[in-house]
Length: 512
Image (cartoon, rainbow, N blue to C red; front, side, top):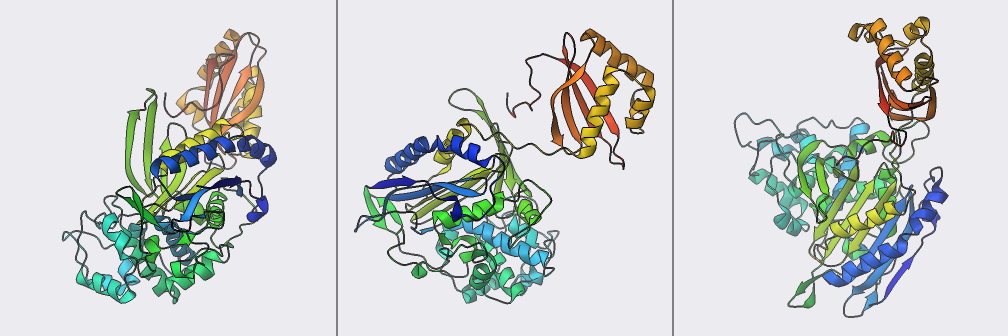
């Protein structure tokens, strides 16, 4: 097999670089050779004919790697323009289309889906007390339909007329609507019908005109026959030690659940667009979907469970989270937020995953049935984080929190009743009388040797809550304050405790 890996010009993605991006990029780039070795080894070990993958950093595609062949008979190599099917990762595009229509005032997520898809009106629930299925239920795999991956994979070619007949014929329920997570390709096919009926145009046209072209995703399509044969990654499965060609599945009514084909560069544009929703901020809000709606997609709307085990080294391994809108959201021992989706169809396997707080993501495409990218992607992200420069972003403190920090630091260094009264919310002295608070704080500062002054920066937990260090003559104090929901915002909680000189103010890891 032939392989190649290259750094891609940042101009591929016309999105702004974050502050300090050059230094971050240089540090992360040091890990690219190790990532390349990891990905090539995975492809060879699992017998994937060809792969392509990319690293997205601060809204830019900074690295692309390719390895292997896109077509077995010709031995044609995969390159950065090769087009792969991405299967269920299509669901995030469908969810974005629904939110566009919601933002335009054309639908509501908590409306019964039958308002927009009349064929659902005759659908009988599993029990007489079952609620009607909402658009939000469909977006979050909460409609109560049975998990349908094996069946759903083979439905892409179904016509709109066939989907209509399916819905009119009834749908069985495995759970009551709105009570549990159960992955449903059928549900996202119905969302495609919602998009078409509400917008007044076929789903493929809507997707192309309202999302793909505005984002510059010109190589992305729902129809394999639209891809030039010289760019298509043909899909294969392994049988009796041989690669067998999987028939190309045509686009149809189930395309909204898994029909898209794309390249590393185009998919990286999509990931960068979703990443760019973080952090919430002032300023221009460019793009076909608002930053607020993109962040909404990346929230847990339906919890789907947790695991807590020890890995092969004995270290704790936590994974907890659920499904947003077309995206999975998890917390682990390593990352407070990880957003992802995988895709698998006969002949293909794909993944996109990013860490919003670290500003880094990975996309990976392969042309073997259900190419498993979870493990390699986890290892690749760990390599990138280990390289440095990917410290989690911290929230910006509101100016009033910084002001209160300075006032509290002065108060603890030298008590003044007038200053204390000016910063205290109405509850502070009700929770603990002022005289007792003063005595407790003065004991702590005296035990630390007095002469206390703030040391280092405020570490915010959010805009109105944070902690800072007071360095005293012989010891340090940790000061925590949170402000009340009033204008002006005053201190509703003020905790002071001793801390070791070498102790960090950074948050404790999620797992110990």
